[in-house]
Image 1 (tube, rainbow, N blue to C red):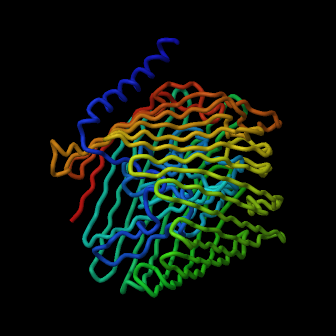
Image 2 (image 1 turned 90 degrees about the vertical axis):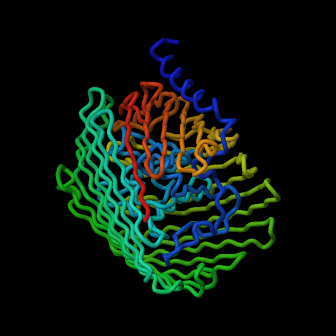
Image 3 (image 1 turned 180 degrees about the horizontal axis):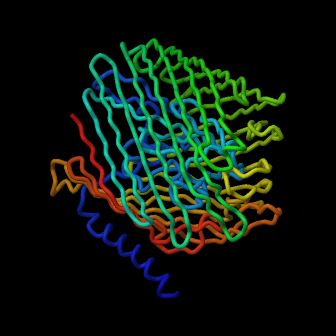
Length: 595
């Protein structure tokens, strides 16, 4: 091994040893919420003042089907965007074309844009403008999010984003300042106030600027703003209105293999009005919701001005939920003036016995051009004590990108079975998934991205593990095809592992005023295929390992942190041709204030 490559590995090993050394003498710490550690109803915290209910995953669900990232998880994450957070989901490949500000599409199960759906406060985010095929998670800031839930199916992910709202009466404020390599600068602010009369106010802003990296001229400025006001006059009725604006200004980036991220200067603006009425404060019993949502995309500069101009979409929705201690039925219908004029979603969960969970759902959507989509899924979960067994099936005859007039529905049938253990210190799932063949649309999932080739049928082994030993948590996941050929950007062998030390040092700080987190992580994949170039020639995806380290300490609401990305100085990036700069360091401070 060359000395230049050995030193980064030694640095990571040293960090791990420093973290692990005093672990056995400390009180147990807590890191990001492991899969299924949060019960379905825990999204509704006990409030001091009246607050609208959170738009969390309808339940109940089979064991292992839900991953929860709480406010605490987001606050202590080594990252800034939704793409950074989803890297911890088993089987996900984050196709980073650089750091924050550059496209970072999520690829899962060989389905391209059809492999993931993102809902913001219960409303699906629609791909629009230059991102007309798939929504880019690399453009979604985590600052304004209180909670993220990921519902997993064979070859498909549904991601629920829950916006910030404070349950406390009075004021809650959060500030973050970041600096680092490549002239990185980031500033974020969150202001929340809730009055005793049921009115709440939430304001967030997140600004990020990154210039260049190792010989490449890259400039990205990203500004995400959100304002929301809600009113809960009684525990049974609530209204919420919010505005969001996402602005991106990015220089073009070319590669040696003919791909390039084009010049971008655009903004996406959204508004959402939601009204909810329930027969019970905890949304058990019957509840009705209605709302209006609008999205507008506008290009400010570059070639996109001529090609795309301004795009807009308006939609209305009406939902009905019947929930009880053991069963939930949720029906939502939507009408829109965009490419999907009419859609309906049905989901249900039932626990007939205390050791049996049945869940399922269906969707029907009508698209322009006399096209339609139909999807159905179901699962059966059995659990006794810490042990569980679950089976999943998902059938779809759906259009992946309704905005593309040439895209037609494809039929797929995906099956999965998994076994698991879930206890206070150990969470483990191991499963087999049979993924059907699929042909993504012949357009890139993100600007400057390779075309994805048709994915053959394959059987995958997927597993995840989380072990807590005192103040140390070892966690990770692994995915590998056991038969069939791996699709583009789903390497034959892929894994992500982390070791985290987190403790409040109760012996030295009995007031719990101090907390420390040290984490090292390693993401690895074997050689695969990275789509095709404009001539249809397959692009090799070299195998590599990318390491990172993170340190954050907190003292009475004040936090200081240090982040190191690509600590192993890997020469190969996530997408061939796009450099992932080595040893990229950032550091910063955060403040959290309460009345």
